[in-house]
Length: 130
Image (cartoon, rainbow, N blue to C red; front, side, top):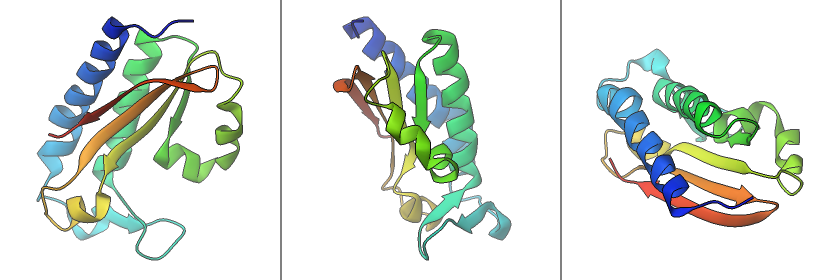
């Protein structure tokens, strides 16, 4: 399995679209119930994190059928998914809003990130700064 430059551009487009549709419309507009703590104090998740991860997963499933998808929010719910990364022919590791604390604090210092993993090796990555 190869992960080509064209695949990387497709991944970049998916992250940019997630930011446009799910992240930026919610920026500086989160209500109190839209921000929650995960397992550890100060480890936040927002409605934007969850919506962006769902969007990115759906688009990656269409673009790369059969790929293992590991998102920050999904891995929090099912840590066992991390153990499947090394064996996967193709996998994506996604952080839908890297810098959630900044995002939730209305600071424009956050990004959308994803890495493509081919048989346990990083084949490409995108950091999109919306």
